[in-house]
Length: 363
Image (cartoon, rainbow, N blue to C red; front, top):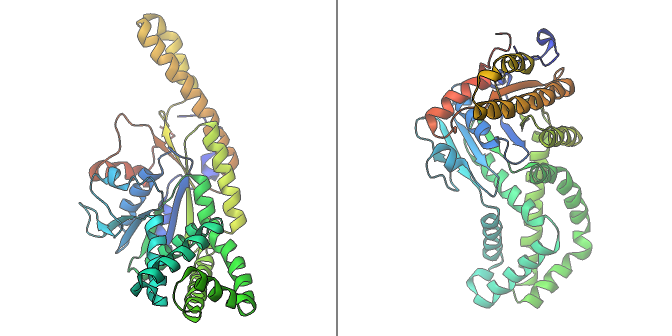
């Protein structure tokens, strides 16, 4: 077996069975550093959840969507049924389109949409607002996404997130915006008239209509944010699965992610380690075999085995660190590096079994 210097009898089960068994979970976020296998893990988790839940949705919040590539079928902005399943769907969101949709709804609410000059004015005003406040466009997009997801009839939603930095910003929106909107709404009576005057300068709708539409949008967004914030901080409804590979930068990023999640009050007790070379084998045993047989191997084979052994030793070191950091409290799942890409429904189904029935490290 691989020797990671831990007593596995005292550790949490090294699988994601705990997620399948927690029927109260509604939102599951999957995140980590770029290129560590977040999309594959999200798809595999969705495939396993489909065996236990009535309706499952996978949502990609990464601007560089990969769900279509993983499932080998076209997936758009609306929930798309996944071939080979009767109760699994997926969708890929676009933040830019969400902001445009918000602007169009504002135009309709103010009546500016019926007037070409007025529409241009309110659009200019909204553009100025969404570009002058850092992150407000993403926040509004996030609000639209959560409103859309909440209105859908799904038992559980798996979020395939963008790399760590973008994801942390996404998850911080409920906390940050709740405070920001609180201050904005407190000041609306004192400064609300300025919005109407600004709208007149841009030529969009009547001042009262614009003021009511803008403040109404803020109030609506704030209500959604409050709901989302409450749900995010409820471990019975929300959890975050951290994904990494056994390398320094990825383990370091995972530690930062775990700390930030704790700061936001978001539950996280599962870590998936992808691309592990021979999880069930020990680098020292492999090294002994290599040392005793390398003289009988061709030069090219010796070089290949030597590089493989170097990487195996490096991986074992970081896997050991991962267990040292998280082994007592987290379900740490080791997923093997395969000889082929995990693409298409059948390969995803096969690979997903290892999330639930991991390789026996005692063999």
